[in-house]
Length: 395
Ligand code: FAS
Ligand code: PHB
Image 1 (cartoon, rainbow, N blue to C red):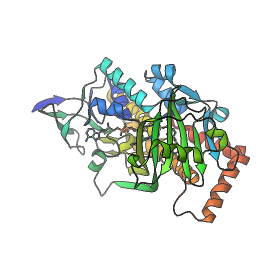
Image 2: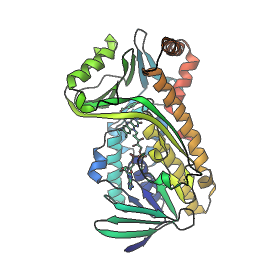
Image 3: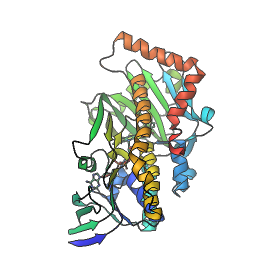
């Protein structure tokens, strides 16, 4: 058993864990990052694609924004196209003066991994036998196996950045832990296509279901259609996908779409989940370990970055100034942002999807909500602020 001592152990090397590791290392706080999958597997994941203005600013301030500013694509906002109605732009730039950024999570994760290699933050991937003890004391201990060796690490804090399926949130005693969950009765079938995207990120609402046109680069497009959960990607030929997607588009949107063969196809179930509190003793949770959002509103990755903005500042204040005020308020501060983002994600998911339980009254109510958005600049302004995530990441 190799014995080590560090200040912070980070479990999970997705965007949350890797960014936190970099920021702590930069501030002179000793940490190690533990990942159960291989580096290649983590970097192969295809997930989010749209960054909020605050997330963009935070990544720049963190020294991680160089390639984002080179190949990322600033966006004024995201369009909603509603069957039989004029389309509407959630115009973040008009109402907040700031821009969203089209920059895939895969690119961001690559940037974080490249920076880690440059800074040398200790990182172990493909770990097994993870055990975490003593989070209710002052000296938590984390043990794991890597490359056939057993390792035990004594630390001051354990940060659960282990995503929606990770073990860390379970360490909070059941008598304390509150889990709020909402499973939606559908998923998003997503494809990646090597073809030019349409101009705007566009949410599409049609009587047969939701669709989304997204983008990664000038030659890489991402598309989604609302789909049943009992049909996996193998049930979706490219022809079936394109027939469904184009069938849901208003003609003026369909005319912009360059179809093509999919180079990736996956199904993501839609659900909301929030774990409270986001701290227990010496354990802190961040990112999907604490909260999951339906992607209608592009909050998942942005809220993971929001948590890391709060938590990195709190840990650095603890170690550099022995000031625990931010650590003590982290859970409440993070959760107030999380629930605001949950509201927006829930509201947009309800508005834009077809639910099997919908009756004619439901459909009229959603139509009325969209018509109100079309008519009212006050409602448009409020929606733009919620969508942009302000004032979340800007303090
Ligand atoms: P992550 O899940 O990215 O990373 C957690 C890491 O912890 C993983 O690498 C995992 O392997 C590791 N881990 C787990 N258990 C461990 C253990 N026991 N020991 C060590 N490591 C462990 N968000 C959007 O905004 N827009 C989208 O379109 C969108 N699409 C998504 C599609 C899918 C299929 C999924 C699953 C999520 C999607 N998200 C989307 C949300 C996603 O982007 C997350 O918000 C983002 O990955 C959060 O980052 P992390 O908190 O770092 O969690
Ligand atoms: C994406 O780019 O994959 C994306 C964009 C906006 C969303 C969800 C996903 O709301």
